[in-house]
Amino acid sequence: MTTTNSTSDVGSAYLTSLQKQTSKTDSSTGAAGSALGKDAFLQLLVTQMKNQNPLDPQENGEFVAQLAQFSSLESMQTLNDTVNYIAGSFQSSQALQASSLVGRNVIVQTDKALVDTSKEMKGSVNLTSSSTATSVGIYDKDDKLVRTLDLGSKAAGKADFTWDGLDDDGEPLEAGTYTFKATASIDGTSTAMTTNLPATVTSVTMGTNGAEMTLNLAGLGSVALSKVQTIGI
Image (cartoon, rainbow, N blue to C red; front, side, top):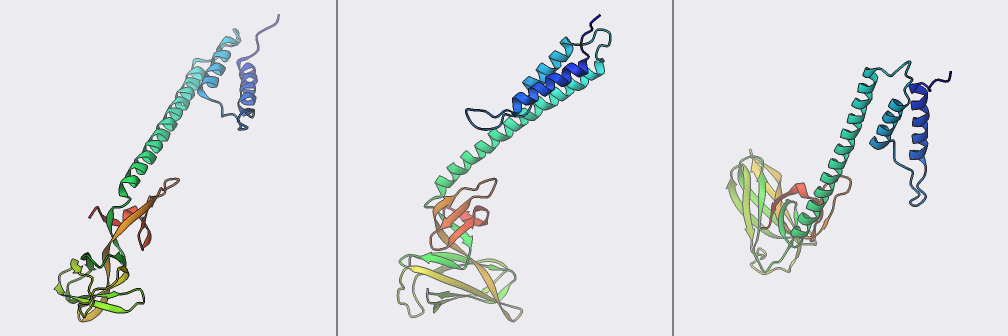
C-alpha cells in the first residue's frame, strides 16, 4: 500500500522550491528576489498540514512553534515598515527645517565673523571664571589689530559686547571678515576665551545615513546644527 510522504519530506521539498523561487533574479529589475516572506511561510505551513502522514500526524507543539515563527516574522516586517516610515518622515522634516533656515541669522561659537560695519554687531565672551579685566581684540583680514573693546570686570558666564564698526581712532572700517580674540584676567593671569558671534546661513547640507544637518555660513564655512546656540536673531 502506498502511503503519503512524511511531513518533513514534503516540507523540505516545498521549502527548497520556495527558496529557489525567491532567490531568482528579477528579469525586469535585475535585482535578486526577496527572502522567504510571510506569505510563502504560510503556504509552507498549509502544505505541511495537507500532506501529513495520517499514521504519523504532526504534533500540536510543532504547529504552535511554526505559528510562533510566523507571528514573529510578521511582527518584524511590520516593524521594518514602521521604521522606514519614520525615517522618511524625519527626512521630510529635515528638508522643511533646512528651507526655513536659509537667510536666517544664527549665533555660533567662533572667532570669525563676516561683518557689515555700517551696523552694530553684537557678540559675547564665554568666561569660565570671574575676570577682573576683560577685553576683545578685533583684527582685520591682514591680522592687524584695528579695535580693542574694554569690557572691564565681569562675572563668570557670558559677557556681551557690541562693536559699532569703527577702529580705535573712530574711523569707519570696510565690511569684511574680522577675527575676534577675547582675553580675561583670571587670578592675575591673562587667559584666552572663546567668543559667540553672529553669522548668516547661506545654504544647508542635508545629513545622509543618519548624519546631522550642516549649516553653511557666510564667510565662516560649515557648522553642525547642534553647534548653533541661537537662531533668528
